[in-house]
Image (cartoon, rainbow, N blue to C red; front, side, top):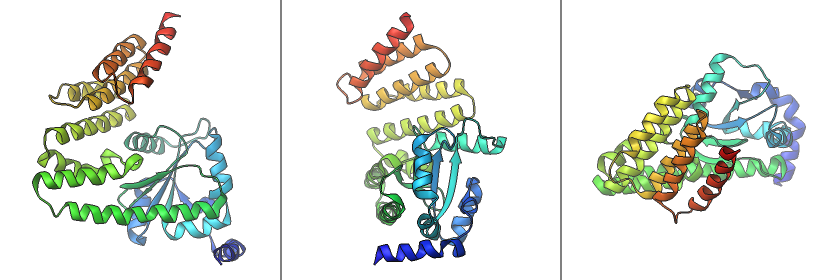
Length: 295
């Protein structure tokens, strides 16, 4: 029956849907306003439209199909956040997208985020095989995570003090890869205010990385470095968090063209927690960087 319904929608799509280009917007602020008015969520497509092969496949196999175009806009406002190599963009869109890339900590493309109308992410996905029917079904399943998130946040906010901080921490941890620190500033502030030393240091570090990424996106690499250095100076940071910050700081050194400083920072990161999950990766990166510097 479901397949039959989708087939019927496909036949009707040319008569009942907007042209594909009009289904998507690149204006994040306008998309949030529309989502609030229409009581919808946002689907954010972080893409490289003219160079990323998997992005092109996702668009061709899913986003450009009548099935997706008929179903997805009923629940989501569709936002394309493009990072092209040759496609022209306005300065305003370039600045908007740079900030969003930093705020969502985008590491690869395509990255698909589902958020509420405020832009607070609750699920993340990417390219998936199976075509539009499977993709729409997957999005419907992911959308249910917002209901669980909202219920968990409401329950957490009924607690007080340290219990509230721990409950909020559990909610944010449950978001996994969809967590974006800048989008959950209210919850993070409450955790820092009511949490124990471990929770406070955890989220001070999270805030520092988010701030540094925003500064980096705005072109202020020195400000980003100072932010990370300030966080590393906070007493009581857990070794894993300190290692993460040193690793991030090394990336900033590489970004500013100082591989020797990056190597020293990576070695610091390894020394902080030599048995961590990240340690083996750090060892490999250190050896590769040594080889590059030696050439």
